[in-house]
Image (cartoon, rainbow, N blue to C red; front, side, top):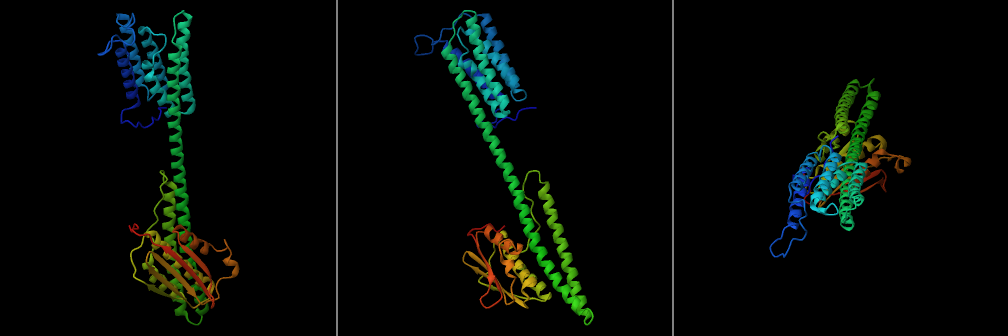
Length: 406
C-alpha cells in the first residue's frame, strides 16, 4: 500500500524530488570541499586517491544511480527506497578517502527517513531509524575489521542528524494524526448537533399539531350529534393538521437520512423553516381550534438572522401549544418586541397553568426545548405562573449587530 506523503511546506515538489536535491547538494558540497576555492591556500579536505580515477568516478556514478532509484521509489516503496539511498551513501563514501559516511552523502537519507516516519505507521519509522543507524555502525565496524581508520566522532554527528530527522517525522505524523482525530470528532459532533436540532424541530412541530388535533377532535366529539356541520369542520381541521404534520415529518426524516449518509460528516440542511412572519398563520390555526391567539408586535420589525427567526417562532409555537394542552384558557397573548439589539418574546394566558410537577427540571420537553433554544443564542428565558393567575413565558434573544441574514 503506497504511503500517504506529508504535505511539503516548500512547494509541490514530491518527496523523491527533495531527496534527489539533497543528494545533488551533497555531491556538490563534497566536490567543493576537495578543490581550492578563491581566497583559500588549499582545499579543506584532501581529494583522496580514488576520487579522480576511473574506479572512483565509477563508484560515484553507481552511487548516484542507486540514489536516483531510491528517490523514484520513495512514494510507492519507502523502506526499499531508504535501503537504496543507504547503499548509495555507503558506495559514495569509499572513493572519498574518509573514515566514515560523511554528512553530505547522508542528507538524502535524512530526507527519506523523515518521509518514512511522517507518512507511515510508527513501526515503519522505527525500522527506518534502526536501519539508518545500523548502516552507520556497520560501516565503522567493517573499516575496523580491516584495520582502517574510522571517524567515530564525525559518524556520531551523522547519526545525530538521523535521529533529528526521525523526531521531526514523528512530530509531523502525530500532528497529522491529531488533526485527523479533530476532524473526525468535529464531524461526529456536527452530526449529533444536527440530530438534536432535528429532534427539537420534530418535537415542536408534532406537539403543536397533536395539540390542535386533540382540541378539534374533542370539539367534534361533543357536537357530532347536535351540530354535525361543526363536527365536520372540526374533523376537516383534524385532517388538515394531520396531513401537514405527516408532510413535515417526511421532510424531517429525509434530512435526518441525508445527515446519516453524509460521508464527509457535514450536517444536512433542513427544509425551509418558519419565522416570525408565520405567527399569523399559527394564530389562525390555534384560534380555529378553539383557543384565541392575539399577536401584538411592538417596535419596528427588521430582518433577523435565520437561526433567530426559527427559534423565535418555535418558542412562541411551543408556548402556545402548552396553553392549548394544559392551560384550559380561552385565549392567550403573544407579544413580540423589537428592541435595539434584542428580540423579546412574551406569551401569557389567564388559565390554570401546567401542573407543578411539569415545572420541575426535566419534566417537560417543551420547556427544556425552549430553554435550549434560548441558551444556544445566549439569551435569557423564564417561565412560570403569573401573580394574577395564568402562566407566562418570556424569552430575550440578543440580535448581534452585522449578523448574517442570508
